[in-house]
Structure formats: C-alpha cells, structure tokens
Length: 261
View 1 (cartoon, rainbow, N blue to C red):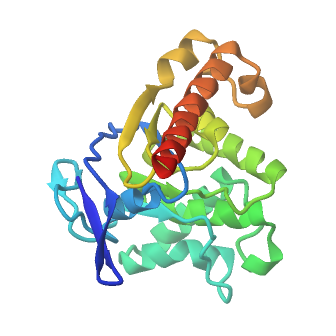
View 2: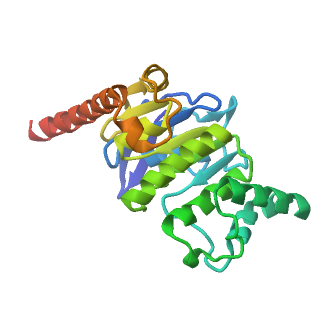
View 3: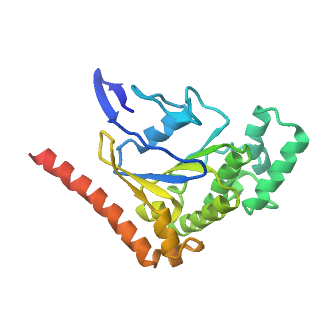
C-alpha cells in the first residue's frame, strides 16, 4: 500500500509498501518516528483517507468509507462539551437508530465497565482528563464495533493518569476483547499493551520489523499481570523494549547518515 500526498505542487510519499494484518481480536500497536505515517495508517483503516495504490480491507471487504464496524478514539477526547456523559455516549447509538430502552441498558453497562457510575449526568468540564478519555472509549465500545482504532489515546494525559489508563485498557481488553490498532510514540506502552508491535521507518513510512510480543508475555509470566510497574520489571519485557528501541535508533542513525552524505 502506498499513500502520496500532493503538497505545494509536489508529490510527497508518506507510505511506501506498507502491508500488515491485524487478526481478529488481536491488539497491534504501531510505533515509529514522528511523521512516519502512523496516523495515516489509522485514517486509512478508518475510511477517513484512501491509499494511492493498494487497499485496506476489513473482513475481506475494501474500506471505502467510515462505518459502524470501526470506531476511532482520538488523542483529544472530542467530547461534546454541552452534552452530559450519558448524552455523549448516546450519540452513536442514536445515529444507528437503537431503541431508547436498549440505549439506556447499554450505556449503563458501559458506565459500570469504565468505572463511571454516578457520572452519567456530569459534563466533560467536570471530569478529569482520564475520566474524559474513559467516556470517549465507552462511546466507542457501546457501539460494539468489530475494530477499535486508537490514535495516541493517552498522549494528552499526565504520566500517572496515563499509566492508570493503560491498566484500564488491559482490563477492558480482557473483559471485552476487540480487534485493536493502536498508535503510540511510547515503546513501553506498545510492549505493555500489544500482542504485536509494528515498527515503522522514517518517512516515507515502511515497515522495519514486526515484533511478536504475545509469546514472550506468556513465557515470561506477565500475561496475567495488570499493573504496569510489575510487568516492566520482567526481564522479557525489558528485552523486548530494548529490541524495539534499537530498531528505532537504527532508523534515526541511518536517516542522519543519509542527510549528511
């Protein structure tokens, strides 16, 4: 798959020969240097953008537009400030024509799952950043999508809240698994959350390597752990994190050599 953008009368190659698969109920994270095309990959999967050549497929069918089977969580919470938590979560259900009784039931279930009981009538400005992002995730999960697309969803949070949200996402993924494509700059976050990590090169974005995390997680004994600090102390976690850092470091060094050649 290739994606070429036309800017200032010139063609700019953003993605070149990118090809990978996200299996059903698999959690795949994309990491790479800034500007390598991670978010472009997510937008293509969401149907918000289209490849210049090649195709993006979900369930074997080409993606030609946004659809209810794919839900997107952005870095900025994108909540309607004039709507309550309940009303924000209800937006997608209303657009799908879901009956009122079922909407109430599904929203109540999501509020419980996300630890937001008692906040249904609150407005976004009354919530912390972490709670607002929980609402944004609940708004996606309540639609029961086949695929969850997450574009640095914890990037705007402080370090402590980010850690708590990573643990919440692991808990949610185990309780209600989905196929997830997750964009992040943080290598530790990718290794902690993902079954596989796709490491991308500098622009134009290509795939440098796909690192399989799940086997090491099971063998290393941290598959059942949820707390970030416990997992990050494991030797297998440290080894995988270092491996991905080396790949990214190689990309940086190679780029600098090309620029000074």
